[in-house]
Image (cartoon, rainbow, N blue to C red; front, side, top):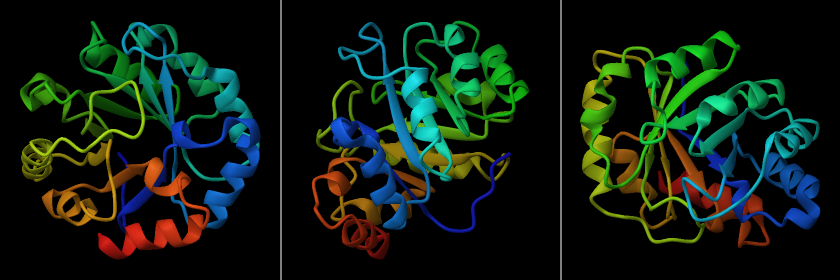
Length: 219
């Protein structure tokens, strides 16, 4: 299982400038990022198309930070092995897309990666209760997946609180993705979040070190 000593900031590369991705990765690493979050979209599960394993492999060559690959795809079982080979530290799949969730979580771990399960804003925590004993991470989507720059959905806080209570029995970390800013990260942290995915809040700022420091100070 994953362990955490402090709250972690994971810049979302979805908001980076892909024309200079290596430089962007280097900047946020130097600025104090803990993880790098890579949003993988297939144009089917979500209405957008982003990157594949080749980009993950390229990013891996330019950083020592853990690479957190979030698979927003309709058939995650087809991509797990590819992203593991590309150098993913953690692979997260969606409960709504995985037909055999328990099996796919186990497969991720067999490949040497940490296994995460994600739920969309309209998906209840009850849908993943049976896999909580085995997952390393639960990613709570606080916006509807598919696009960056969306506003945080407030009822997500109650999901985080429920998962935080469940951690009394299990060892998973709680990650939140979508609309995380300096103005709400404190409340998200108080609800029980361990890992904060932030895209626009970091990459829209010229001074990435200051952006990350501002987020961390508000936790």
